Image (cartoon, rainbow, N blue to C red):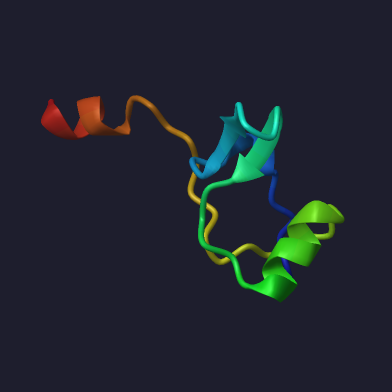
Length: 60
């Protein structure tokens, strides 16, 4: 069973001022980039939750 991921909550999803759009900051190959652009990503192997407080919780 494949899980659906949301790029909006991923650490690698960032705004690029040069393109004036959100992009994936991971080094994607051509097939992965095509799936990202066409919004057909099903199970991204690079997905990491954008949890800003993860480091703080580890320090406590």
